[in-house]
Length: 209
Image (cartoon, rainbow, N blue to C red; front, top):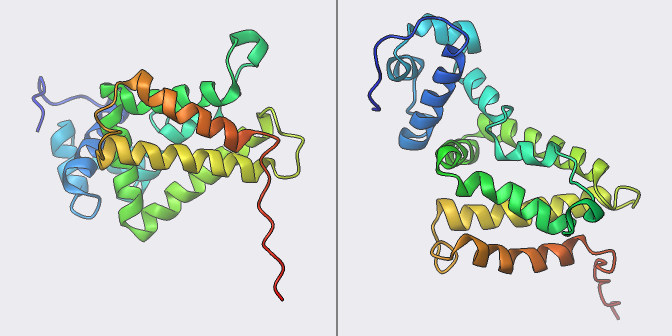
């Protein structure tokens, strides 16, 4: 448990403090073993305040997934044009998304969201719906938004990034986990560019005799 400077009043910052405590406990104990009472104790507030802001534990998780803390919120952003930044859309997306994981201040919370979201059927549905909605939103503002397969390409791109993030930051699989961030991006971006390329088409299955 992290040290705090006494019981917090019910001010505007209390909601964020409760959310921070919940994410810490989700990461340390898992979703099933985290209780409202434990969240309140860690945040140094009355359990009634947790219920006031979030109703129940599911509400806390839903707020976490839909907050700016969530890495899925990256997909809500409209990427700047290549002309403005001098970089590719894939490069912008990879750096913006993976920076959430690279930043120590947000990595723990992101790890908690994904671990809890993948461990329980109720929370996995919340996470799935959020990521799916965000991916569709990003596809609608992407450079290939007018293509009929825009959502498919966005889903493939987001799945590529999510999988790599889990391998590097959650499972800590080497050599990905030990790479310098810029070296990691240098490997990630070319593959992502190919996924987003207009030249990439699904392979046609060979005809059966």
